[in-house]
Length: 370
Ligand SMILES: [Zn+2]
Image 1 (cartoon, rainbow, N blue to C red):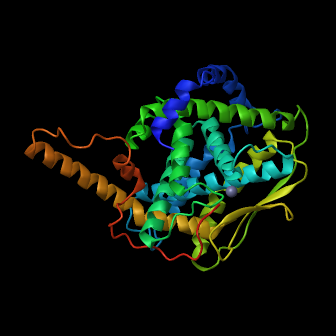
Image 2 (cartoon, helix red, strand yellow):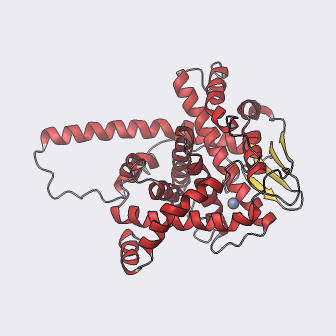
Image 3 (cartoon, helix red, strand yellow):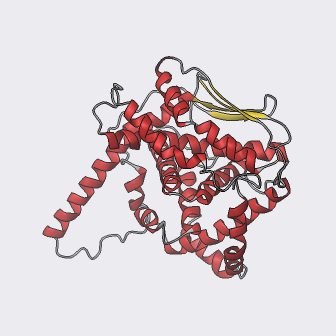
């Protein structure tokens, strides 16, 4: 659906502004509820999630002799590690939404995969740190890089899939970010040439998503003093080249961080397990029967491949675009008649290289569909 159609819908929907106004009051309640740490958490203790950025820096330092990373600067290594960890965190929260929907019998009035993405986005927005902002930006890039790779590989778009298309999943992140805080996210929205009318409708989308999650989770919040369910965390061995990912993710304590917040925030009906394993394929899943949420190390390796293959292409593309603009400005006094920026062209600044770019397609056995 195009931006114009959204604009028309907003204009004819008298409730939209009311929803946004209502959210100004009640979304504060939502943010106090959604994975907030629950009633039993001491406010004097710093949340473990605040320690993630420092741990990522440490992992970046520990990888200075890694064959794929030793030519990078420390900052570049940290960015690469943060991209992988951030995308794994996004997938972990997405899968946790599947667990909550199944375990708590939550109603889903739409596609569950979109709902799970919404949960991950809203949880990160609720945390509201510079780190979680970067996680959302990295997750956006991850979907764009994935779409670019599929295009380079000649994979047809799976319109029938239970998941939205990769680019749609990317834009949904930006939409809820902009809907949450149009000013703070202006740079990202501008970079993506996000249309003004869609920015407006994203306020409504954010408000409705926030209220919906707050409503369905409210009956499952713990009372003061109520004991938490145990959420076990397991890091399996990283087989072969996956060992560095296993060590890095263990050092970052990604599973423990999410397990602690999840146990505090919701009364789960039974214990369950968060685990990372060598799976033999690229994916993540929640399994009702085993009560296990599994993230595959292969998925982390896949994110690393995406970052390695596309990030520098994007930077080079931006640089060459800037050079071309400077050249045009100096040789053409007027650009009147050229196409105004309205969305499609600007996406490439984040989406990565154009179709004819020669970024090598990494080998992978399975399509990533967390
Ligand atoms: Zn899913």
